[in-house]
Image (cartoon, rainbow, N blue to C red; front, side, top):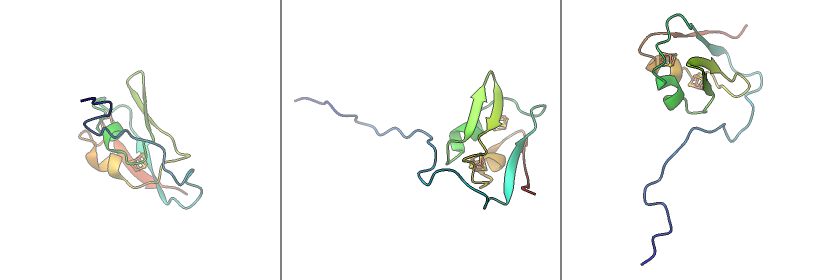
Length: 86
Ligand code: SF4
Ligand code: SF4
């Protein structure tokens, strides 16, 4: 019997199907690099896949970030602050 299919589904973060966020977001995550310990929890849990990790640094793709605050809530180092969009 051939098993040419994936036995276990693997989900990967991806940009939201609705596209760019536009101007309706009211808060945005601000990463305090001095507090970040590089655990990648924010990267794993962001439902929009908008956390970027490069050279151990965390950045946010604000074009797609929805401001949901999940990253801030899961960060064990309290390195992500949700700030007003204004
Ligand atoms: S606020 Fe939400 S969408 Fe934006 S980076 Fe954090 S988890 Fe992702
Ligand atoms: S969850 Fe917090 S400590 Fe971990 S990588 Fe993201 S910003 Fe850094």
